[in-house]
Length: 375
Image 1 (cartoon, rainbow, N blue to C red):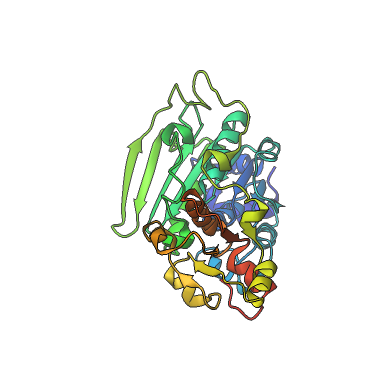
Image 2: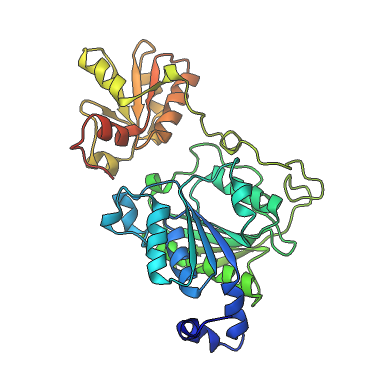
């Protein structure tokens, strides 16, 4: 039953004939898990907490960075360096103390996904990478939970509802991930700061509709939004009976290695990975090593390791011929992901003295150069 304080707080919902007290009580009894507390997760958390969802779980293993603040509206400069899930929970508790906010300061993985998801009525995908999207999808199908999907890039976004009322899942739309490096991340390609609010607003709306039984959902439809032209397009989707996870004869009946499925390089072997301390020591001894910064130009304007070359990752394949296989090459990026791909590119071309700076320039700043700007 709603308390007197809740009746007052949610009075605008109660005034809606299609919603009313019954709808608000359904929301109060519901459990929603948000995967990712970043660009999409921030407005999602604000709107769902404000709406009165009973239990709101937030999964995110990252910490707040200054570059997040352009779009991740849950956080302030005082939160920089703090775990996102914890800071999000504090902010949302202050917004609505009637909601039970449960932060999980971890990365969703094949080991913990089913254990987390089983306790929730639906999952909202606020992630920004393909391995976690496929993991979230498969876990929702295996656990029998709806998956409210959204994604953003530059000036465009899309949203849908997967695995709901017999509708398709994410794999029905995208059976295979794109090749590694084909789709730039938001860090590489950028994102308009207000874009996540539009897509997250659609996701939150779909979640509330599912939980209260109102209206028609986006199940079987993919809504596409373009901010530059301010247009919406819709694609009709159907469940694929041959889908490996939700099809008539599924071949995926347990969670798999999603990094391997998406072609993400594994943690590099020790001889191919170099930490900041080891790299600095070798440079101080005068060892001839060529450092190659594979970040975007604007990132290099913020900070760079002295003496390094700058070749953005997308330009690197065309410039392999500029290097000798006798050189010792060390690639770095912001945190080690893109440079791992660069190292693999050269390794596949039979370069044997190639390294990836583990943790990227952020680790270099932490361990070697504490005055270096972070982003």
